[in-house]
Amino acid sequence: MILSIANQKGGVGKTTTAINLAAALAMRGKPTLLIDLDPQGNSSMSYLDIRAADKSMYDVFVDRDVRLADVVVPATLPNLSIAPARISLAKLESRMTGELDAPFRLKDQLAELHAQYEHVVIDCPPALGLLTVNALVASSHLLIPIQSSYFALEGTDDLLETIEKVRQRPNPALQILGVVITMHDKRTALARDIRDQIRKVFGDRVFRTVISKSVRLEESPAYRESIFTFAPESTGAAEYYSLCEEVIDRA
Image (cartoon, rainbow, N blue to C red; front, side, top):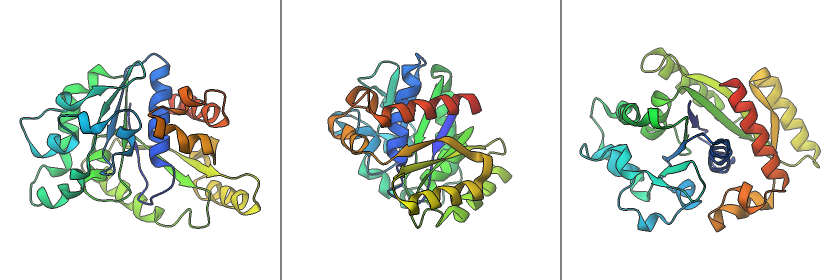
């Protein structure tokens, strides 16, 4: 399974979902690769010191002599590897303007490496530009995190339109695996109303597991740990493991 985690809105728990879902998959004993395509590099920094990395995903995209395997480094968690990002990815769009194979760079690179991993998780940037398109073209499945907040569904039409365009030509096999509700505060009536609205819009695409708003989930990346090692008894750990089970069942 090659799974992109995408939503062009920022602050919806996309990176939190990427790092903890990848960790949960790795904990099942299956080799898992987490590819960071967000120029902020938060997925990378959650597991390693990216300043020590010789190369990053930017080099994979712009230097044809650099292969994806050249930038992959092992995480501290067994069975998990990281392809790190740096802020230089932010200039990729202008650098690759006019290159005909630009949307296919990641797919071509993964073709050489995919057999080594049972699961590949791609953390996309909060935008619908070249990086996200590369992820969608390369992926078999897409997971969409949506925060249970007032503006939760804003922009989802644009994301769904982009998905349909990718399906029409470069990747007709792309499937929406599901929508996960994140950062949910069940104590408030508004959050419960938004949760019900999301379920009304997306129907059975919405995962049963809802990710609660959690201080532990916010803290764990600062210690370069997943929620499973930072706070293994926490609600966040239980919820992300439950989400992992649903992802595997659906894939």
